[in-house]
Image (cartoon, rainbow, N blue to C red; front, side, top):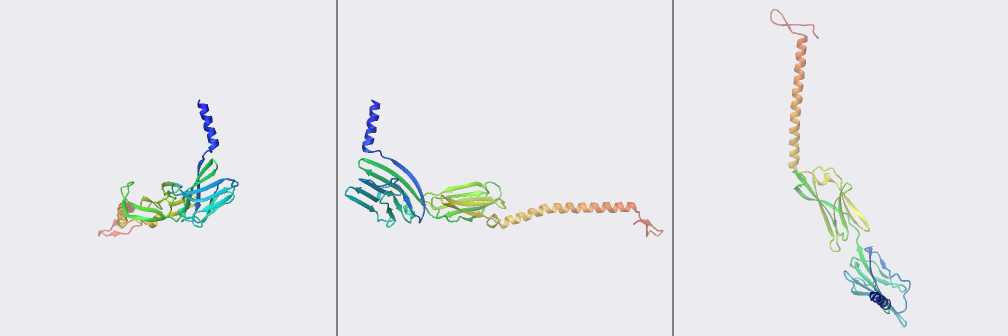
Length: 283
């Protein structure tokens, strides 16, 4: 009984046509043209080719080709943002979007109907804008680092107009943090908290499928320690130098004293009858 049911379903699918729904992702830079292919060599008699569009769900008819025995009809939407930007191939039905804009991002649904046979295919088109160079700025004058007991320098790596991009922060070649933008957000930022006098190399990178832009972090320029830290360092240096100076002074005095005593033992002083010093032959 089950076998007969399967056979009947297969026959019905062959009669009415199996619906095929595949989604293909297509990326394009803003201003460039993109073609969505039907993958058919030539439009056949009684073909009805429809193109629908929607930012999230394709429900707006933007182009159509109908080829019947007595009629060949072409329709292309003149509504914004497709006005004067759509082109249909009369042989294959492929759709070309010229001089793409960000508003052309969305889902395009291709439906080919021929009698009782229907095939469906979807395209997810993503339009990317050129990437700007990330900016690195001082986010705070002074902060307490969780990694140390002392103060820290807080920087902000940010980029604007970077929709569908990823912003990453690297310490040398190691990834510190990253954040990705959606179709709606276009401002990305990553905070970086570091100790003063950090000698590591940092870089901020924004990328999308078409390329990347990098900004290098100059710690010495952006993370100058405040005056109180300089004063503290000066005091620490003095505290370290004073014992050293005192120790050297004591050592020098001891050496001089021992040398003088040794010279006196080698050449003792002689006195005359009146108690005065007499010259000696010790040199």
